[in-house]
Length: 260
Image (tube, rainbow, N blue to C red; front, side, top):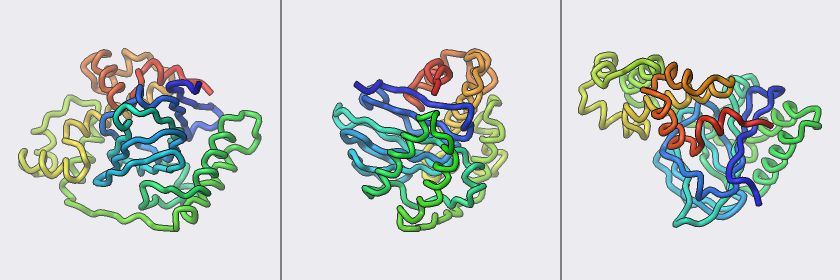
């Protein structure tokens, strides 16, 4: 039987991370986002996939895509089993390839599905000498496999974007809602309502998500969990444990101790 959950990392490929989940019933998420570009394949069963304002049912053979910063979640349907493979790729590495973020959030292309399964197999095999080159070829081919759709930039309200940027810049600080309102020039009631419409999370939820992302980056470096909790702005280690489990369906220790 496939393991319930395992993270994969390799020091030789520091720009990419993967996760294998064998029983998605035991790996449930709160709405969250990633700083990286995320792409994965459903390898068994089915689940409900939410990305922005889209909600679809995905099943084995489906590819899902999440652009950096986009709030999403994917959870089981009525306790049914499901499994998947996810890839998290650093945006600077993709930018160096002139990669354009896709507009599509999912695909049922069997060609793309097979291509990604091979990409995972290559990554997990340390004996493959040109893993980075092979992965670069996959992402260069991705627009064609998706139909070549370019992303559509939603300008939105610039003050809401300023609020999000302010939160990101101060994510490890003890921010209050008043701090955010003052920084972006919006009223409390408008900020709460409009921010959720724009980003899919309340300002507090967005702040928590950013702190989890910061903690995730530090845990990859093998930092002590208690130190990470303090530096990422959590009240204590228990607070980090709860937030991390809600956002990534894994404990900080399980995530930090991943190996290839």
